[in-house]
Image 1 (cartoon, rainbow, N blue to C red):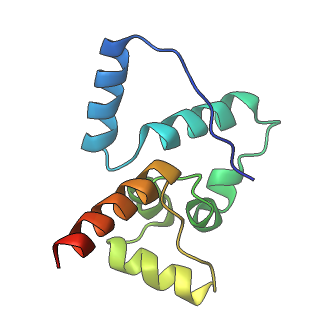
Image 2: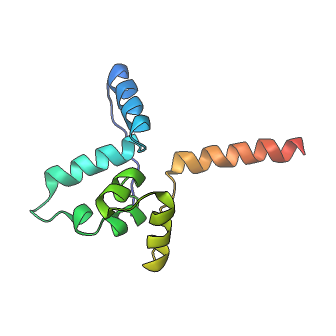
Length: 110
């Protein structure tokens, strides 16, 4: 189960983190999740032990999954997910909401 959490961070830190995430093809959520996983791990690293599963569960950014799996691109990652019978990761809730709002606007225009 995923839970939404609120963090109080300085505006400049959030701006830098968003910029870093965009430049590295990831999200702030993935960065925070990976860091918290790393500092609370009990010696095992579930992300590097099975990066494909971690990506499917939304715990690993696309670019990082491609790198850890030694794949050439996103298409190869999609094939690997299919071969392993794993689902695509769901977008974060805020992204789903944004997509729904955009769809509603487009629907009203047609």
